[in-house]
Amino acid sequence: RRASEGLEVSDALGKELKGTAIIVGWDPGPQEVKPDEPMWSPEESLEELAALCRSLDIVVTGSVLQKWRPDRGPLPVGRGKLQELRKQVEEDPEIGMVIFDLDLSYQALQTLKGHISPEGECIILDRT
Image (cartoon, rainbow, N blue to C red):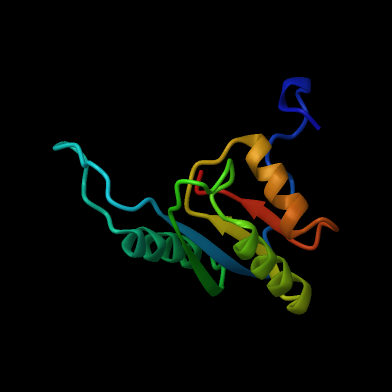
């Protein structure tokens, strides 16, 4: 489905968020911080996302932190992490969500869903 057709843009619209979650963070490596922006480490950002999940009664059962690589491609995680996440989703029927600690495009979310949860076993979300 395309967002331009007015159909649901998020994998989660109209669905009850149930089951446990895996959260996925991204370490962009060294970067310039602007003076008016708070300095957050990738670990702190992932912990904040876990706290947000807890506030929504979502139990986080695992977390993954992807290190930045210049050849990573268009997705925030590489092939190895995608395979790792898919295996976790396939092996644990309680996992209902994989939540990325990034703002992702609709296309990126759908591509990630195709790699991680092609049968719709779980919902793929971003931080927004």
